[in-house]
Every structure is written in C-alpha cells, then in structure tokens.
Image (cartoon, rainbow over the protein chains, first blue to last red):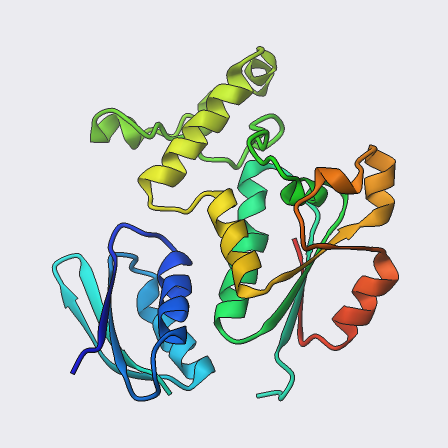
Length: 74
Length: 171
C-alpha cells in the first residue's frame, strides 16, 4: 500500500533525495512513499540513502524514462 | 560504520558553477542524517550574501568548461564551443555575462535547482554555515550583507568543529 506519492520528474540531483527526505519527515513508521523521478543517478542514490538511514527500499522499477521507487519509512 | 555522523565542508569559491558542489553536498549530507557545517571563506563568502544574483561563471582561464548551447537543434547543442573559442575573446565586455546566462539556462534545462533554492533547503534542513570573519574584514563585508542565522568565526572554530567530523571536504 502506498501512503504518499512524490513526483520528481524533471528534477536533477539532489532534489529527488531532498524532497523525499522532507516528505518522509511527515510520515509515520512503516508507511510507504512512492517516488517517481527521471534522474538516472537516483537509481544508486536511493539505495545509498535508504542504506544510510535505515529505510527499506521495497521496489525499484523503470517505466520508460521514469524510475519508480517504493520506500518504507523505518 | 562510525557512530559519528558529521560532515564539514570548506567552501572557498564564489562563482556560479562552484557554488553548486557545497550546497549539493551539504543538503544531501543532511538529508542522509549527517550533521553538516559549511565554513565559507575567501570567495566562498559570496555564497552567504543576501543577494546571489551577481554570481557569475568565468570562462576566462577555464579551458575545461564545456560550452554547449542550451537551445537550437540537437546537432547544434552537441557542439562544444569551449575548445574552439580563444581565451582572449572572453575579455570582450558582456561575453562573461552571456556565458553566465547560457549556463543558467543549461542548469534550468537539466532540472537543476537554483543556488537560491538549494541554499534555502540547506537552511531549512539545518545546515550550519560559518562565515570566515577574517576574510569578511579583508573584503570589506559587514554582517548586514549576509543572510540571517549564520555564525561568524575564524579558522579555530572551524577546526574545532571539523575535529569531530568524519567527512571533511575542501571545495
């Protein structure tokens, strides 16, 4: 289940990470955020971001030029 | 992983292009749960001024800067004018401003945030900024020229903060 969706299409590094961090701040533990972005560098960045903060990267998939991440807040 | 999670940066450059790395790293660092302090010294002081609209790029003496036009057909945008333009030409008044505008447009086309936006996010998320008091005096700045909420101090303060940091970068 997705609790919140964040569309960061067209935004370059580091905005997808920054906005995700801000969105997560207003969410409860175990809630899931879906982040949609077009920044190719974010594929590795979100892995590092979740790894560093203990969030769970549930899934990551490509849809055309978009990358869609589902992240569960720790 | 170390239990300490602090990052300290020295921002020493004040051109539009070099304004990005400290703000990008500081904001990303704090987004990744670090405590971040940025010490702005010499030309890096420019990054803390209230008005950032004067930030320029300087193609003069910067031979590695790619110069691709942010408009026109694809084949045209692919041309790198950088190596083709003699350095001497950048002395012509107005060309540096033109290059700056092209760079701003390139940033915008690529979805990059403006320096103003990145700085605001840094402050919002709690990045600490220290303006180097010695260079402020040297360049004739006063505290009123700078944004609110920053600290004014010298090298010893920076080194004291950096002592506890486990990532320390000079930009």
